[in-house]
Length: 249
Image 1 (tube, one colour):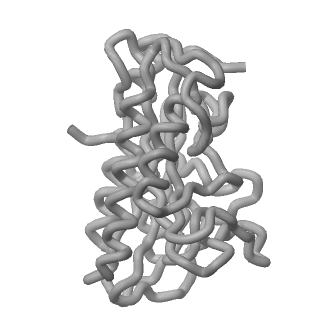
Image 2: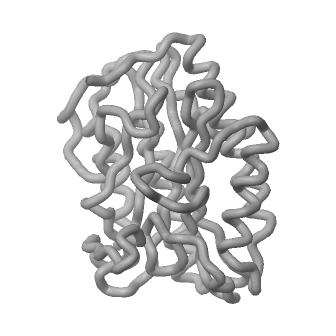
C-alpha cells in the first residue's frame, strides 16, 4: 500500500533528508587516499547523533554499521572496515537517518583522488540518470516513466542498470511501497500522485547488470568485477512537480 504524505509530513521528511545531505557532504570532504572506510562510518554516526537523529541503517535487518561504503566493483551495502581507500578508487556512500519519526535516505559516489576517464564517465552518467528519473517523477505519470527514463539514459551510454535492487517509497518506514525499479517501460505501473515520496536510486554497472552477494551476506558486487556507481535522492511528488528533499539548495 502506498502511503500518501501530508504537506506537514513532507516538511518533516525534508528536515530529515537535509540532515542526510549535510552529513554526506561532510563525508565527501573527508574522502582521500589512506582514509579507512570504518572511519567514515564512525564519523557518520557521530554527526547524526549530534544532530539528535538516529542512523537508520544500523541494526536494520541486522546490518551492523551506520553507513554503507561500496568501493569500485561493490554496488551497494558495502561494509565499512579497516580497508584504506586508494588513489583512483570510487566509493559510494549510502546513508539514512530517522529524525522526528521520519526517515531520510540518499547516496552519492565519490572519486578518491584522480580517477580514470572511464570511471568519471560512469559517475557522470549515473548522476544524470538519477536526474532524468526525478524529472519523470510527476503527478499523472507512472512509475514506469521514472524507470524508463533512467534505463534509457544509462543504456544509451553503454552501461547497464542493476535489476536485483530497486528504489522504494519512504516515510515513517525506511522502505515503503512502491518499488521503484531502474528499468522498465513508460506508461506502466502505478500512477504518481501528490503526497508520494520515493527514494530514487539508480545503481549503474560498467559491464553486466548481473550482481553477486559476498559471503558477508550484505555486500553486493558486480558479477564481472567491473565498476559500479550509485546516486540517490529522496523525492516528493507535488502538484508543482518533483521536489528533491535530500538536496541542499
